[in-house]
Structures are given as structure tokens and as C-alpha cells.
Amino acid sequence: MAPDNLGDFFSNVDRGRRDFLRKIIAGAAFTLPQIASFSLEGPSITAAHANAANHCANQSIPQVIFTDFSGTEYQDKFQGILRPSDINPGTDLAGGGRPSLNFTGGANAAGSTWLTQLKENTLPGELCLVQMSADVLFHAYNNTKGAGLLAFRNQATGKGLVLIVFDAGNSDLLQLAVVDQVGKLTNLKTISLGAGIGENVWYRLILEVSNPDLDPITVTGKVFRHTVPTNPNSPLGTQVDGNLEFSGPLPIGLDPTGDIGLVARAVSAVADLSVTNFTATGFEAV
Image (cartoon, rainbow, N blue to C red; front, side, top):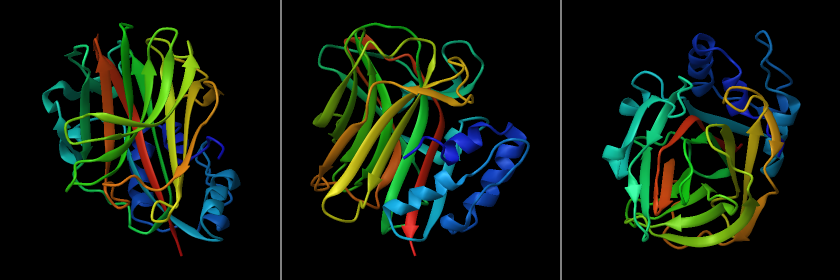
């Protein structure tokens, strides 16, 4: 799927218009193949975005969740699960002044996981495609730390699906894993990003899951640079290495209608990383 999605659309709209459009889209149902464009001095939802529905059926209805963690959005909409006192809204740790959710605190050689999720997942059940994205920033390098997306978290088992991009010097990684109730990761697929991740610049992390209610599921993970590296609201630039691709049964203990949110992970490192522009889109076949 091309990277122009509703997250990109929102990120190119100033905050006043963004809040207005978010309220409209969150309460509306769209038939994607009929959407050609929506223009407001530049931003648009294009036919390329409509093609997302081709993963599902001829027609799909998108349901959208978006937050940049400005104001009281985090306190109002999220609840911390693992290390909640070290997950706090503010401005980005690089000093750019961007509204962000910041993950702080250290981890020893055994590693530690930070996790927060939406209090209410408003995405419908029986989805044919889930697409999530967020912009992440690593403030300083020290050993291995990562930030990522959480999906399908089962409250009964405490397990969820996570896609995490790691800053690890010359051994950066993109990892798909199952996280359990105490933060332990069970790897499903990992690809090398070389030395593709730098500090104090923003990267767009994208997770796509097709047919989460069926067997097998298909998962794609991607990381993109921004054309203005210090601006998470700038257009996407080049991709960092290739796609992470996974196909197989939904891991035992996950819930395809479960909770969504954000995750961070560090090993022998201080987390000090920021996340903004969290977007989740669920495509429901009609």
C-alpha cells in the first residue's frame, strides 16, 4: 500500500482544521471507492487511499482514530498498562516543541517494556484490514531501544501484537512480536535496518494487518523517513530498508477485536523517545 493514508492527510492539516476534520470523519461512514479527493488548501484523500479497500472487498467503510497527544488527549483517551508513570504527554524530547507522548526511564540487561492503550477501542469488529501508524523519535543513542504500535491486545490473556522499530547503533531492527502481560516479547519476524535509524529526527512507522478475523493473517511493517526530518507533519520521504512481511495464523491468545495502543522497549538503555500522530484505521467490509 502506498504511504498516503489518513494519517498523512491529518498530518498536513493545521491543528484547527485537523480537529474539525477528525470529528467529521470519526462520525461518518465513507464508501472508499467513491472517494476521489477532498481538498482543503492542499491535503487530499486520493484514489490511492481508496485502493486500501482492495485488500478487503469492492467496498469498505473506514473507521478512524487519530491523536497527536496535544492538550489532554492522552489523559482522556489512554490508560497506562506497563510502566505508566514513565509514559507522559508533553513536547518532544528533541526540543522541537511538537506535542508528543514521551517514554522515559531506564532498563537493565534483561530489558523492560512500556505499554499504553486506548481506554475505548472504537474500531468495529469483523475488520478486513487494520492500518496503524505513528511518528517516532529517538532522543539519544545508548544500546537498544524501540517504539512501536500495539494491536489485538486481549484483556483476558494480556497478550498483544506489536511492531517495534529499534535504534541500536549499526544494528537497527524492525520487529513483529507478541507481547505478554509482563512485557516479554516473543518474536514472529525481524528484519535488519542496518544503521538506518538516527537520533532527534522523526520516522513514520506503519503496521498493516489483512483479514485479522481469518486464518492466515497477513502483516506488513514499514518505516519511512520524512522529507523534513525534524517535522513529523512533513510529507513522507524514502523508506528505511524494505518491508517486514509475515503470514500465518493469528497467534494464540490475541483478540482480533482487542485493544490498540503504543509500546516501547529498551535493553540496557534509557528509553527517552517520543511518539506523535498516532493513527488507527479499521476497514470494515460492507
